[in-house]
Length: 536
Ligand SMILES: NC(=O)C1=CN([C@@H]2O[C@H](COP(=O)(O)OP(=O)(O)OC[C@H]3O[C@@H](n4cnc5c(N)ncnc54)[C@H](OP(=O)(O)O)[C@@H]3O)[C@@H](O)[C@H]2O)[C@H](O)CC1
Ligand SMILES: Cc1cc2nc3c(=O)[nH]c(=O)nc-3n(C[C@H](O)[C@H](O)[C@H](O)COP(=O)(O)O)c2cc1C
Ligand SMILES: Cc1ncc(COP(=O)(O)O)c(C=O)c1O
Ligand SMILES: [K+]
Image 1: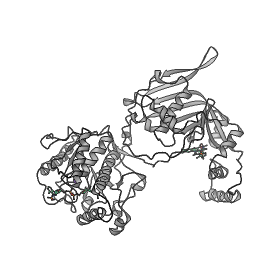
Image 2: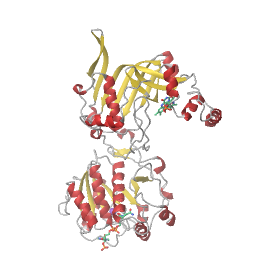
Image 3: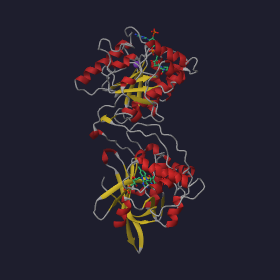
Image 4: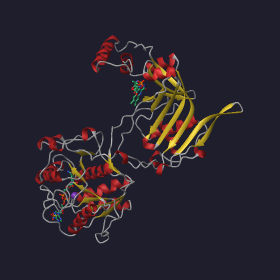
């Protein structure tokens, strides 16, 4: 089967560098979550999937995103809590026999704080951040977090009233100044923080706090406490994110008098401290993904698994989900008629290259919708395995539901959704089977396991149990030793959709999306594509 482009990824990326905007300009108000770089070579016709961590998020109110699910959700009862002495000991061990420097730990701790914030609070709704940094390492975490949050697209400010000239800290200050991040003195802070900031990062004190807060931190802590009364008066107030310990709380007994700050988020570092048991805010995260087994064993740490490559993990359950508030506010470059390719296939290739360059997961995954003679539509995901001037190709079982419907009604719709770029592409047309040669060639290009799977699976029929499939698979594995050719089943092969309509959709703010439709017109006996803009 001929693919259309045999371009290497390098060539595609260099093409992209001439593109008016790079994928980085496509902006969803969703947090920047690290995605691994793809390792697979890319060429048209045979596209390999790109692994990336499965991350699902839920939100609880406009602009607020819940948190990581799956293995990160733990019953808080099974979590360990460190005493103040244990916390100090762990740090000493990490920075002594275990070879870490305080710079490294502070960098990782600050990054954990920033990623925890980004998991929950979208920069489009919670953009202005004030990091209040104390005189010790907790303050250093705050300085590091401010720098990362700047690069995540937030607008950070820093209040760092008691500075030390230690190179580590003055270096952090220089880094922030080089980004023109404003430093505000205590006197420069507004009396009422609620109007000027969306997030307050409490990086004043960590596990070395003791006694009563001394100036100027006593007043700063009071400012944060007062916000709680605004909240009670139903006034919008900034969320408070406490680093490691809610400042002013007793490191072990917590908010002893009950009149301390009430953070919305607590980012415990390395492991939660005893005071975290008294934390009742909606978002408790763990950061500091550097705990070696020696420490975990010594302190019998029970901690949630970090998912994928994430630098933070939620402790406990995300807050109740308000599904109606689940939305992204798409911000993208405008998509204009004068910019697009005359041939929709060229336009598709351009957008597909962008999706590949943006490292989106399986950009060749598409929803395939079919309808049989009963007029009842059905949809499912399939993988695009080739596209050229003749059409869009996928492979499947010729006795499945989709196959039955296509035999009754040989028309279908394809839908690509490239979320990282706020884009969807719709392709509709008539469908026919590809040649046996194409099916044979593709079938034998698949991993042997997939070939055996295709034989085993009477796709879309009822099976008594998964063990039946696995037993049959095992028998076939023995039957077809490593070298022998696995015969393609007659009931397996490809389909090609010959496009009769395309629509390219680019998400825009306020739902005023760009939609450009291509439909075929006969002009002087030639088929040309007419391009119109559809209302969003
Ligand atoms: N393992 C990790 O993930 C790492 C976490 N880190 C962070 O470091 C803090 C602990 O840092 P440390 O410097 O030991 O302590 P603090 O940041 O809590 O603060 C110490 C300074 O605060 C002063 N202090 C103490 N009590 C008061 C008070 N009541 N009023 C005013 N000032 C106070 C204290 O002064 P002293 O005179 O008491 O010495 C210090 O100047 C930990 O919690 C993490 O956030 C690191 O990043 C390393 C890795
Ligand atoms: C991302 C993804 C890609 C898929 N790709 C294919 C494919 O290329 N071919 C296929 O037969 N099934 C594929 N499937 C499985 C189909 O979604 C579906 O379960 C199966 O084809 C049966 O559909 P049917 O009963 O409607 O025919 C894929 C599923 C997912 C989630
Ligand atoms: C059941 C099934 N058949 C076929 C395919 C086509 O893809 P591949 O050849 O890469 O397995 C897929 C892909 O997910 C699939 O799930
Ligand atoms: K703190």
